[in-house]
Each structure stands twice: as structure tokens, then as C-alpha cells.
Length: 531
Image 1 (cartoon, rainbow, N blue to C red):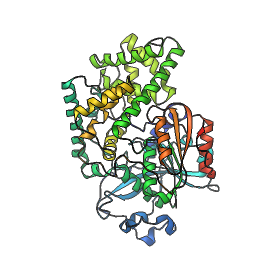
Image 2: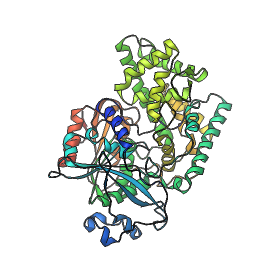
Image 3: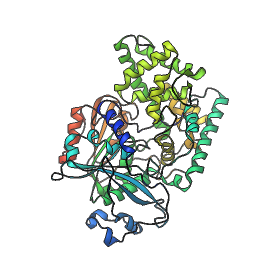
Image 4: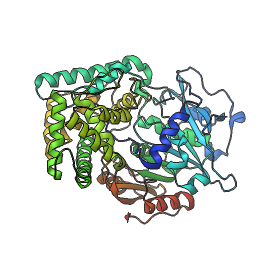
């Protein structure tokens, strides 16, 4: 099973789901960033491009060869939801005079120019989520007063969306990859899983070329500091969700003195190995599934049982059914049955937000009573950014490997995965098997991890960094937020006792008020605040 339940999926219910649907439509009007690798540096001289004082455009120590990038001016043009620009960055920071790529940026100006505080850079997660699309939903991703006082700025990180996207395989090939058996049961199936995982890694290498070695989170954090300078900000004000918390943490490690008001919501702790991520998420999804099971029972006529234990057992039995006998679907241009791989994707989608629980219950009832997985496939398509015509509108499920595999090492030994599966199943009987194998592609990745791999990050000397955790978050378990807040020298933990992935602007006034006050007034929440 591919790593498509790794940190980073955006919640999609209520206000936010509607807004992101709108923003997806608006995205078609955006000025597309250049996706070609070029051999030029920014063309303007320092005198022509300087947009702020020397403190905002200061080049990191020992990196004088990056001056032209730090001193570039963004050429903003109207693009519908806001103003768009392209930021030029080096393909390789080890060779800043070599090839360059363009990073697509969207700014939605503050509602009040008179009371404007500055720029707030946002990232929705992934890795692979579009910051451009996220910023286009500015009216709902931050509180009203924050929206009024800040320019909301999003960028597609390198390899993502409009910024030199990584595109490994064709859409039909991606269908097959995502639909493959996520729980190989015997030696033959495990060898086949390894072969397909290796094949996907080599396809990415052949398709992406030199770009593939240069899309790590360390690279994206360096890009973000150049963006900070181009925005004329001495310090970076930042909202990162899910994987976006890791991007923010790595930025804080590299540019500690440039950390402004940072909020990291739904944290991915930087010292986790890939298998620790898998086990943590398996526990998180088991916990979320049990909460859904209770809701299913409370609503009456739950299709999988009358107690939480019965429903969880029923879910496992249903997955075995999908494994041995794929369930029919209708209305899809390429698929006429739903495999276990796709069924896992559909169920996972609903776990990110309790607003989708009733939809999942109805979809599973269709499977149990009518042998029809059409509605469950609709959930899976939403997760994969896939249309019923079979077209993918995002490259998130390809670039997620390109980033994760450069950030953390993984084994390619089947025996290691068999051992990890046993550990995960003991901790998470329902989701352990599915998630264990999801990272095997990284074991075959053609480029070694960069940036130090799993490590504790303290960002010693930084300004306070607010870490927000949700107690029953499936994708980024609450324990990870506690872990990150403890590691950061100036970490401040805010907890939300609730369900779903991430907390800020998800209908909890306590969290929203604390984060809004931090962004607007610099009021640091009480460490350990519980909402």
C-alpha cells in the first residue's frame, strides 16, 4: 500500500470542505508556474531588485552565492483569487549557479491595508499539498481577524502542483499502483509487492531526472526563506498543518533567528523513523475508527455490528472480502471493481474528519447490503484527487514518495517488513498491516536521504513556537504533538480534545481564539492549554 495516509491530508468538512471545493475551481484561473528547469539566475541586479532593507534580504552565513535569489523582486499579477508570482530558486543548493526552477506563489492581500500586520505563509501538508490552492481558501483557513490583518501567502513546494511537479507514471499506471494489495499474505505476494514498489521508484527516477534528488524538506525550507525575503519580512510568520509542521520545524532548525509567529497544527515529530510513523498512524487510525464505530452504533442500524468490537471486527472482515473478491462499482471510466487497496483509501479519507462519518456508514451499508462500492470509491477518489473519468488533478500521491524518501531512510528487506507488521498489528489490529508496507517504495528509492534523517530538533533560541494537537487525530497522533513541543526549546503545546485531523478553524473557539491572538497580538498561549 502506498504512503497515501502519511501526514498531510486536509480536513474537508463544513466550511473548509466547501471552500476547498471553490478553491479547486478557482485554481484553473491561476497563472501556472513554470515547470521547466532552466539554466538562468534571476535577471535583475541587486539595485534593481531590492524590495526591503538589508535585514530582510540577508543571505545565510557562508551562502553569498545565493544573494541574487534573496534580492529578487516578485512580479505580482492578478489571477482571480489573489495575486500570483513565480519565485526563482536553485535546483540544487549545492550548485546555486547552476539550473533553476520556478516556485508558484499566491498572495491573497489582507482585508484591511490600514491595519495590515504582514504576510502569513501557509502550508496544508502532504507532502504534496498545494499551498497555492490552500491560500486561495484564505477566508476559511484562518480566523476572520487574521484574514483582515495578514496577506495570506501560499506556495507549491518544489515538486508539487505548479512548481516543477514530479510526475512518475501515467494515470492508469497510478490507478494500478494505488489499487495493489496493501496486505501481502504470503511469500509470493510479498515478492510481488516489493517488485511493484521498486518499479514505481525507478519510474520516478526515469521521469523526474535531476529534480528527484532535490525535493527534500530541507530544500523546501530553504525556498521558504528566500520567499520570506522576497515578501519583505524580517521574520517568517507561518501556519503549517500536518506535514507542514515538519516543514516549519526544519525551517526553524535552519533559520532559527528568522522564526516569527509559528503555529504547527497536527505535528509530525522530526525524530520519527518511517516505521515509527507507520505504527503511530496505525494506532491513530484504529483510535479514529473506534470513534467512528461508536458513532455508527449511536446512529442506529450500523451495517457492521452492534458494539465497537463487533464493528471493528466487521471492518477487518470487510477488508478481507475486498482482498479476495473486489466489489463492483459503477460510473468510473476505468475501474469496474474496487480492490482492497482502493477500499483502504476510501475508508481512510473519512477518518480525517468526523463530518464524513455518516457518508462512510452509508457507503459501507451499500457494500454489505447491495454489493456496491460506488460511494466508497467516491471517498477514495476524493482522497486521491481523482475524477470518475480517471484523471488525477493533483500529483500528491506521487510526490509524497519523492519527499518522504529523501527525508527518512527505509529498508528494502521483506523480513524487516514482516517483523514490523507483527509489531504494528499488536498495537493496531485493524490498521497495522495496511500501514506497515506503505513505505517499502522508499527502500528502493534511487537517491539517499538527505538533511540528517530522523533527528530531534530544538530550534534553540527561537521565538515561541505554538504546537497544536488533537487527541483523536488519525494521521498525526496527539502524542507526536506532545513530542515535538517537548523537543523544541521554546515549544508551547495547545491540545484539542476532539476528533479529526488538525484543530485550528475546525469549529473549536478555544483553539481558534488562542491561535488568532498569537498571530495578531503575539500573545503566547499558556503552555499546556486544553481546549
